[in-house]
Image 1 (tube, rainbow, N blue to C red):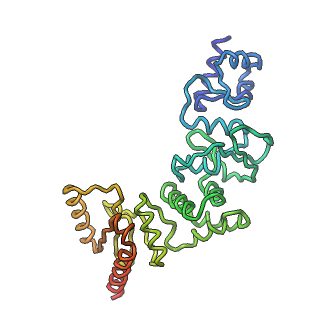
Image 2 (image 1 turned 90 degrees about the vertical axis):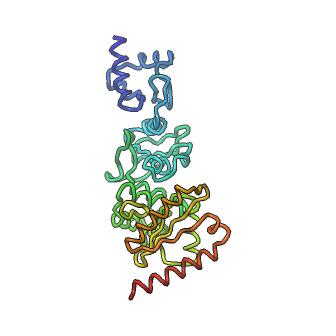
Image 3 (image 1 turned 135 degrees about the vertical axis):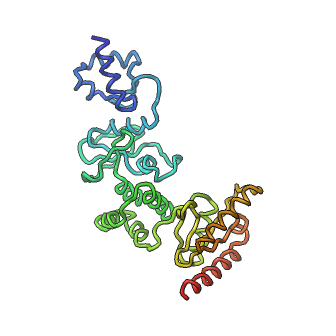
Length: 304
């Protein structure tokens, strides 16, 4: 009997990142006193009330799943933790307590869990890496109430890039939830013709900020052009800007690779402008003026 019970527990745990719940064990026909003996023997290690880890190893993402399991069958990982799971936020953006949304049922509190009692539709409910989680579009809507404008823009751009987010659907959702905090900021980002901008380095981030402060035309960011991905592209003007970050190390090999890349882009009819970290930080006005002149010159050429 003991072997059969342990096999049932192991089998269930293997499907849930090493976790089981008391209600699930009961459904398998395992009595409470049998469960309690294993808890006392540390064969079932309590994570939350009624949620146990089988064995000493902590699987990646098991803390998030444990929080969802602790909140009942109608619970979903949400907000910042969902944003991290969907790779919309950096991994270091994970927070404690863990965000979980519930549509009905569980009304209690759980240590280290931030429970959001919200209305969820069937489209909001999905599963990623074995964890019940809010959909990408619902996650974006929830993040709109928490993130500043630029952080939200980066999350939205990442969603478009990784998950081919349907902007018209998201725009419709933002309109239908017009009263939610953050909805106006989200609608503003979605109405921007250039779309949300995603950058990969601090140098690119600062460069984008200077462009916006100078009210220059908005570029596309991190664009794939044939075999190359360029940092910034003004498509009408056929102008590419490449930004060298603070950690950029010059070498003859890098120099020759960059010049080969620039030559191939130029052969495609593009003009390539390179910007250094020093120019972005210490000579921003001169750099912006040079960029503005290039945009005017290239724009005039495109209009001829």
